[in-house]
Length: 293
Image 1 (cartoon, rainbow, N blue to C red):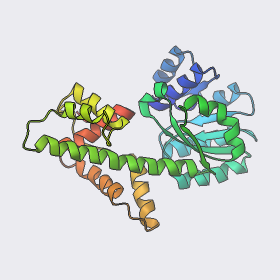
Image 2: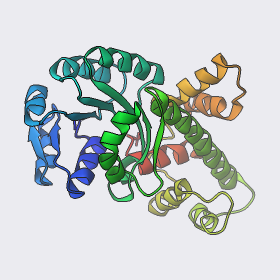
Image 3: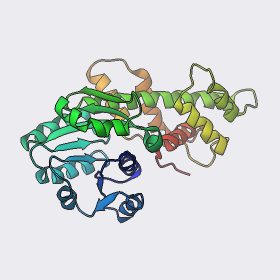
Image 4: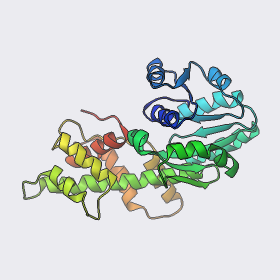
């Protein structure tokens, strides 16, 4: 496992607890120390990581999308041997995953893109995995993937790029859901009645057609801070919502909810509202994403 942060560290631990031998690398000494305290073997370089694994190897990258992933793949690929598998479990653009699959093939390496959802709760609840790559690579990884995923939470979506494509749209849908909850609770808070938002969230969790895990997390956040006053309604976007909106535009597909929810995130950086604090709180609850106090 390359990358032992919030996601990679927990995924390595879940695999370790399932009986798999995991060797971890992270450039941060503190991340390596935390992993070692849970019994995971760590090394201090990519070269040492590859040397510690018997061929054929499976190397899983759990690093930020964009340049960090690009540069890490550039360093790892020349170290791998024919028949090894390289997995990108981050939120990469699916077109990049298609390209990286083609590049890996020139080394004789199988490339797998694993869209991963579950956030900081994945260690205990499992990770929903949307996997792209060859059937052979998927089959070889399947024991690991099934250890990570809950029952029904593993999908072989198709060839290289398909996993990250499904995850991209998944996150676009997430944008719309978060926006709807945010707007709804903004209306409740500013309406003609003195309503208890936490009690409403708790009520909706039981039997309502809008119940969901996100609503569970919102009820939890409101219990800790009834007006979410401890944070600003500043909502980042990590890329997938933009890519989903762009994909819809390129293919002439109407996606007003996802597109407008993306625009609302831009607007959140200019003004502070309860609606945006709800979204910021939910992103922090499910993914441990940073918030502004």
